[in-house]
Length: 218
Image 1 (cartoon, rainbow, N blue to C red):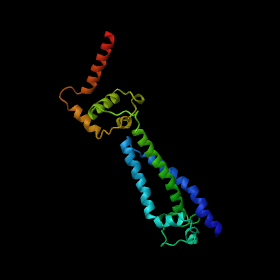
Image 2: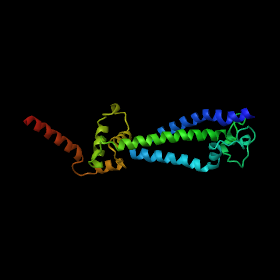
Image 3: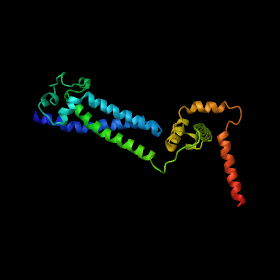
Image 4: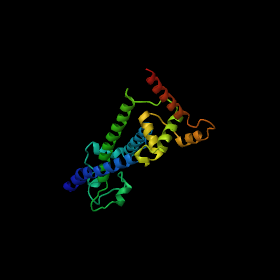
């Protein structure tokens, strides 16, 4: 029994925690939105999920973190589960030949610690990047940037034209620390202009030509 408790309390959870961790990171990264503001909000929300799990399992956390063992025979021996002792519904779906009532919960605790470190590190990187003196900020209007993005999209300058407009917009948001909001709606407003639909692009052309002319006169 001592060997069984040791295996399900210490050995199996360490291995399973890796599976939980990498699966969680894969899901977090594949669902991560573009743009620093959205990403920061998203990572903060994921951290809150970890906090909820901690709060919902506080008693077991205390038991496990304190290295107690007085209920180990119920927690970490197969077939000895007690529904009154912080039992997850996951246990009833598990293979009872290779699971106890709480070995997965231990694995989840270990994995959550790793996920928390990962998320906090990612958030710290965002904050450092946003606070950098070398970062560029878009100081013209959002409408002007939307006009530029659609022009580049229509000109097929990224990935030979095989790029979604949404990806281009989110990349610009991230690069220039700006949130465009509903840029589709902004584009519709550009289309609705009676005159000078490409006001920003026209102004870019004018100032560039002016700069070239000034250089020629020197």
